[in-house]
Image (cartoon, rainbow, N blue to C red; front, side):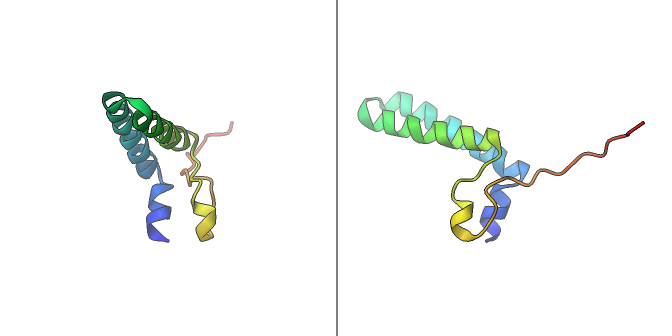
Length: 76
């Protein structure tokens, strides 16, 4: 699925973290039990984006690990 592959790229991970931060701010503003639920969801989005894991990808046959391009190293 193209969308899941995009969300596993560095740009997709950045978007997940940014949206997670926005939802966290909204959760603080909402407060109460809805705010707690939104806060928990936002922390899930932030942590999976930072860790490089997409928990729904295996449901669609994709890898849960994000594809991170490897940098060339100079081995001396």
